[in-house]
Amino acid sequence: MIGIIGGSGLYHLEGAGTVKEVSISTPFGEPSSSILILEVEGKEVAFLSRHGKGHIYPPHLVPYRANIWALKELGVSRILSVSAVGGIKESLSPGDYVVISDFIDLTKGRESTFYEGIRSRKVDGDDLVSRLLREGKVVHIDVSEAYCPQMRGVLCAVLERLKLSFHSQGVYACTEGPRFETPSEIRAIKILGGDVVGMTGYPEVVLSRELSMCYASICVVTNPAAGVSKHRLTSQEVIELMKRKEEELKKVIAEFVKSLPEERTCQCGKSLEGAQV
Image 1 (tube, helix red, strand yellow):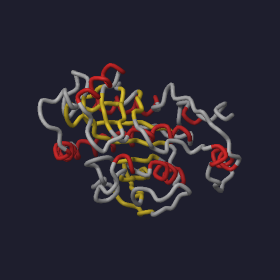
Image 2: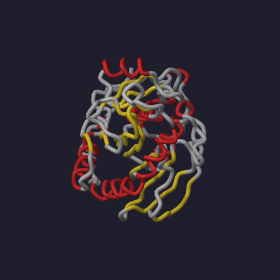
Image 3: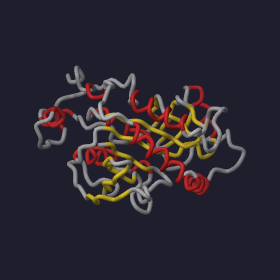
Image 4: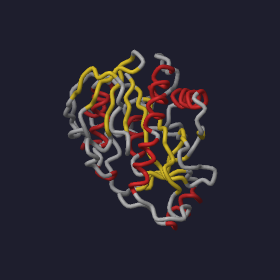
């Protein structure tokens, strides 16, 4: 099953047939919201609102571990993240799509792993992840290719087919939030190689990889970042642009779901091989 995590401005997928709504508890707490099982292009899709109904969770308090674990429990093996970002690279314009290819973690205090050694949560189950947690194993995953290449390829093909303005690669710099960044911080991120900046892309990507799930991120550039922008940044402009892109995003998601092959041809499912100490 494919999981969709909707970010700021994308709190539901209207038009998709709702099969059921699931409330689920996890060993890592409650997810941001109940999960909608939808029918999209004849396939079941699990949709989760990252910030919760009514946008009640700020970026630094999103229950990331609970969200990813809940999707895993429902049988999700691939996650598509939808996010709003600020543009740093000069070639990025508001409204452009970016298919993320790498990340820079600039967060400060987030729980970013399931594997905490002797302090790991003891969970039920016979799968490898559950056994590693029960045994208190320390795990170091490789993130040389953190974003699923198969999903990224399908996303780029879909955006090309729909004739939308997009960038096939981009480095996502994740900051702690909830405040926006300073111009000096943006200049530093640019030197580090960041193309876009957001507050929620990490730790979702690594948590998914820790569970051997595929993860891809499609971002909408909503505004130039601080210092790049010539005006004061507001949350309102982010939500307004995402609202204008909502129908377009639904088409992208539907076409992506239809186009993604059932068979996983990537190596994401092997992320735990050789990773445990």
